Length: 393
Image (cartoon, rainbow, N blue to C red; front, side, top):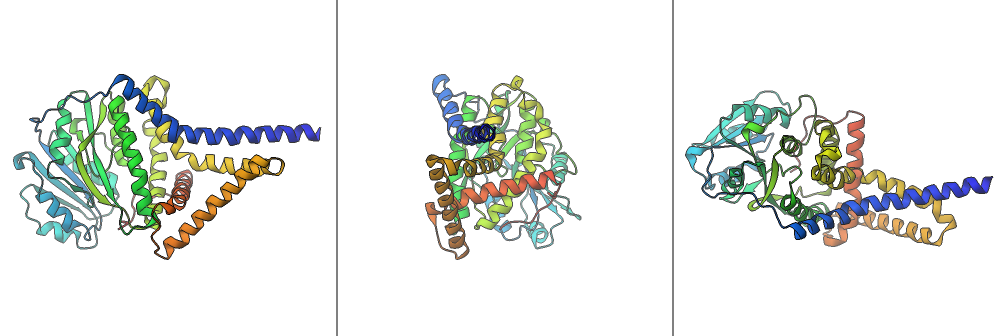
């Protein structure tokens, strides 16, 4: 009897191990291959863009204590090539306590509008208020640390000439700062994500957008939920998809950002985004149904599974521990897992000593970012994620 129970435990452990590994491998390797193959088979589906399409635009930027990066941002905005009579730049200062408000007050750009909110509430409420003030055809969302090419706004909005397109995401180029594991790891992963975004857009629709560089039809904006911390640049486009519009990727609408410059900064950012992602699921849950077609397929494959990778990893490691005593194969697997953790620990020590790791820091980056996702899940489950956060620069 004991042998039968032991055998059953071993069988369950094997199923859990291979199931967990298989699901993660599917999300990171098989799904991207499927989407790329579909694009090759059926061809890309470009938007009916027009270079002469010049709608009125409100560029909205939510700020909190951004004095360190704001001078460079303001100089960058002055270089934008979009008709001044059709452009409004609306800043919302979310109770800033540094020199942000004074820098904005001193900037004399003819298209500028500044709203200084006395109490800090978080990015979502600020964006709701800024969009409500806008009277333009199009809203372009940007961040204080995101720098645009002069023609970026024109290259975003030209795709909105297609009535089937509700939102357009530009291409964000990450510039690693200091060669640290966080920055270089994020830049490497972002290159992979950019390739996948292009393919999803070419086949059907992009999921979400990049917060510092995307445009939407103002008429399609739905206010972000009050009292809940969500990922605005994911939820706003998903609500637009829910209404039957495409979100497309404009690879020539370029923007640039420096990475946070530290793994600690990336960890806090990923944990916050993780909690916000889980909080936002109820807002687009109907798109997870098979009735949503490709959108549901992509959401499960590209997003939901990725957010659950820390749990799959825990299951796989626990299953390995159960299987290793009786299996040479799983003893080797256990050895590889231990070696990976040691490499990540070495990366942590090197990062704390400000030693540049380059590609050698990838195990540290992978482990740290998935640990951050797990922390984000715990924050969501226990209601610990605030609607405000500190700037990581």
